[in-house]
Image (cartoon, rainbow, N blue to C red; front, side, top):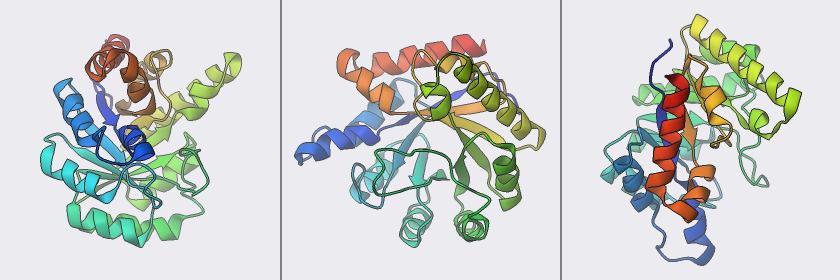
Length: 244
């Protein structure tokens, strides 16, 4: 399932984090999404958490109404999020683990232990016409279970690779290579995301099976200094250079 060009999904959650720190309407996540679209993003990612700590319901509504590139709706496997996704019908829903006390998503779903519960949510999302992705660690058993559940794609968690150093980082990169290769062998579309930055994106982009990266926190942080368009263009350049 290798592709020549990796799609770039831009996660705009932390524009909402800054807005919510003070209240009001500025900075506007929709404006960030539209700027990302103009800069060449292939999709927008937004995570509507149970506690609404950044993205809120109105943000999702406005994104659906105003962007012309696909929305990847990150959600926990809950009835509340299922109803929202089924009503709005984003291009895709990525089911992620979610704990109230975490600062950010700390690891992949345990698809194996949550198999029966996830099967219900995946089935209902697909019935609503929503493509389903599962955010998982690059573990072959988790990938196999995701395929058996009927997920359309998986997003492999890159955080452990990004945070590791030296030999440990090479080991984590090899896990990503092996996981992506296995996805290709079983005809399961494979994406990557979490923590990727200028220093770490190229090695992952060289893995031919990956078709999409979803990147947010680094892009939004870097945009404070140089602007969102320049940040996205540089990330796009690094991805294309590695794949080329």
